[in-house]
Length: 307
Image 1 (tube, helix red, strand yellow):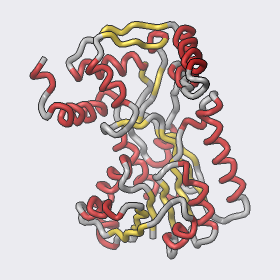
Image 2 (cartoon, one colour):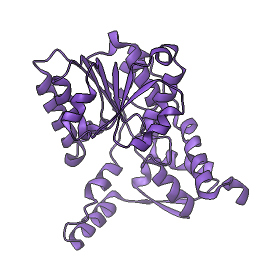
Image 3 (cartoon, one colour):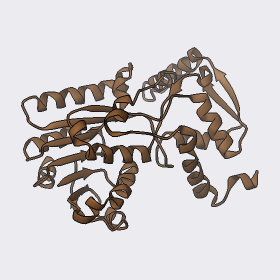
Image 4 (tube, one colour):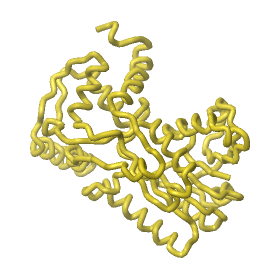
């Protein structure tokens, strides 16, 4: 039995679609979904996949322990915030394998961005030291693929409305965003290749690095927009963040956000490709669907036809 948290989330929905097409899972199920909101049941029934639903709160360890009854594997997609609770509950159950989806933010050199992730994983390592439970950690880069991604959708909206688009230091630093579908594929592949993936850590990044300025230009082209990108030196942007911080009496702190705007985030997924065939799509291919979704929701029609 596999317990999956966050299965109704962005990448979880792609995993559901894959599972629904797999003969093994379609035949016997053996999937238990941990869901906080009963209204989410409808989205699980659409694909006609035999899933046992468990309503609970990830903040409640007792609830997690009940959900883990007769469970061999836990796939935790619901975020690092609840990982410690998941591990504690697993230690009190008969779980043999935990797969945690965290983030490459753990590698950030900036304190707030990486410290909480590093502290959490250090605690998990200590908790599992004397345990027979195997733990696999998956670390996606910046996730995109739907208008609910909180990442690329911000750029899409800004480019759609701004004629002059300010960028820090020319946006000449590289990112490696990963599409939600590629994550769904990866989760399935990890489960299918347990003999190779059990107890290991993997980075799940996009196909190849891409400069932020190129990301913005691709988005602009898909939207049919021609914004003017104006480069702002880092020291001016950072000074502005400091000014806002002081004027707001330390309430609004954007200093680290500005610093991370110029932090390269390039990560190799070579291990994932070797062990379970991870093969993510390129950004230009992946962003098209999100932009189409945005246009449909925002305008209900093709934006280009009105330009």
